[in-house]
Length: 291
Image (cartoon, helix red, strand yellow):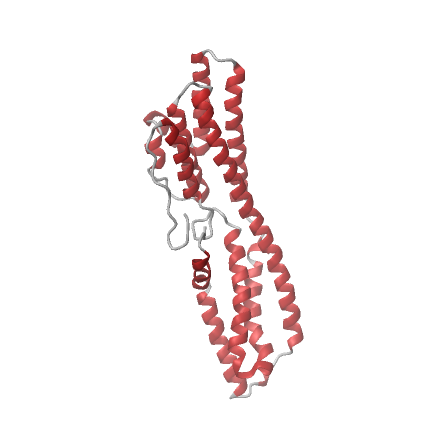
C-alpha cells in the first residue's frame, strides 16, 4: 500500500507510462496526417466523443467505487483480525493462566492468512512461531490458517480442562476464534469472487478505444497542440482505469495491495512483547510502499 503521497504520483505515472507513450505517438501521427497531408478522414465530429467521454467517466466512477468497497472491506476485516488476536492473547494470559505458546501460535496466524490470500510461498515466520508438532499438522492441511485456528481451539479446550475451568471460560476464548474465522471467511469471499467482467475487462477496452478516437475529434480544434490536450485527457482516464483495476484485487502483491505483512508484524509485536518474547522488528515502508 502506498503510504507516502510523494511517491504515489510517480508510481502511477510509471505504471501507465507504456499506454501514455503509445497514445502520444498516435496523437502525433494524427496531427501530422491532418496538418501536413490533409487526411480529411481524420476530422471526426466532436459530439460523439464528448458523449462517449461522459459515459466512460460515469462507468469508471461506478467501477472504481465498487473496487474501493472491496479494498476497504478487506482492510476492515483485517482490522477485526488485529483486534481479535490481541484479545485472544490477553485472555490466554488471564483466563488460561499464561500459555505463552498459544500467544505465539496466534502470532503465526496472520502470516498464514497473508500467504493464503495472496498466493505467495510460505515464508519462515510461521515455522519460527509454531511448535514443530503444530507446524507439521497445520502445513499438512489445505486451508492452513483455518487449520491453525482449529489447533488453537483444541489446545484451549485442553487448557480449560486441565485447569478445571468451567465451560463459560472456554466459551469466551472460543468466541474470539469464531470472530477470527468469520473475518477470514469474509476475506476469502473477496478473494474468490472477482468483479464481473463488465466491471473488470470492459472499462479497459473502452478506455483504450476512447484514447484512440480522442485525437481524431480534437485535431481540427487544437491543431498542433492536439498531443498535449489528448495526452492529458488520456492520462486522466488511464489513471482512473488503472486505479480501479488495482483496488479490485486488494490481496494481489503490488504497491496498491493491503499491507498484510506490516499488519501481521504488528500483531506479532503486540502478542509477543507482553509474554517477554522477542518479536521481529516492524516492517518499514520502502519507496513510499508498505508491504
